[in-house]
Amino acid sequence: MQLNYKVFGEGEPLIILHGLLGSLDNWQTLAKQYAEHFTVFIIDLRNHGKSPHSDEFSYNLMVEDLLNFCNENFIYRCHLLGHSMGGKVAMQFALSHGDYIEKLIVADIAPVTYDPGHNAIFEALRSIDLKTVQQRKEVDDILAQSIPQFGVRQFLMKGLTRDEHNAFIWKFNLDSLWKNYTKILGTFQTEDNFDGETLFIYGDQSDYIQEAYFPIIDKYFVNNEKVVIQGAGHWLHAENPKEFLGKTLSFLLA
Image (cartoon, rainbow, N blue to C red; front, side, top):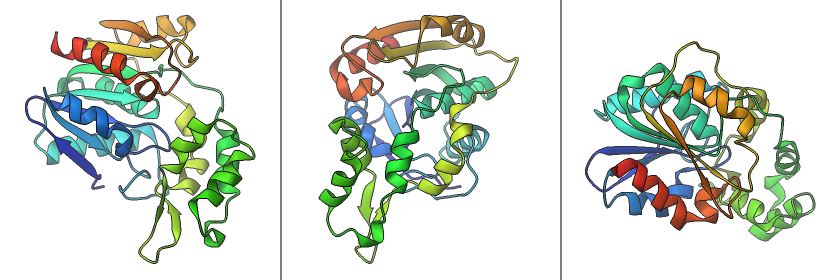
C-alpha cells in the first residue's frame, strides 16, 4: 500500500503517525518546527487522509505499511513519534523492527486494551447522510446534537472534504474503521521488548496513561521515561503545542 505523506526539512529522519480519525494535516504545523532539526515525514495511515482505503485494518497491517514506507524511502534508521492509535503502531513497529528505531516517542497511549470510548462519535458520524448535505455547517449542527465539545467536533470536521463531483465525503474510511474498532482498542501480544530510548508523553487531564499501566510500559519498553504535559488532555500536541514541542525536542536532541 502506497501511503500518502509530506516531507519537510533535512537531517536525521523523524516519522510522525497521527491518531484515529486524524490525518497528517493534524501534525503539519509541528512538523515544520521539527524540520529545523530533522527530515520530517508526516504520514496518512491506511484508511485515513489521502492514503488508500481498505476493508482490512489492523496494527499488523499498519506496521507492515510503515515498514514498506521506510524501505521505499531508503529509511533504515529513524526517530518515530506516534499519537494515540499512531502511538500503538509506533510501539508495535519498535517491538517488531527495533533496528529501524533510533528514538521512540509515544504520545498519550499505553500498550493496553482500552474500553470503547468513541461509540458516540462513530454513531454521530454514521448518522449523517452526506449525500443530502449542502454546507459544512449542516454536518457540524448534526454532530453537535451528540458531541457538545467544540474541540472534538472541530477535529472531526477536518476529516470532511469534497470529491471530484463537489459532494461531501469523509477523508477517513468510516465503515472500515467502525467495523474494525475492537482491533483498534486492542494491543499486541508479544514477549519481545524494545531497549532503545523511549519517551511516553501524556496530558495530566487524560486517562489514557495511568500509573497502573506503568509496569506494562516498563515491561515492553525497558529504557523509557515518562513526561506529563500540564493543562492538556488526550490531544496534548494541539492543546499545549509549545510544551509538547519543547519536551519532545529535548528528548530527541539529547
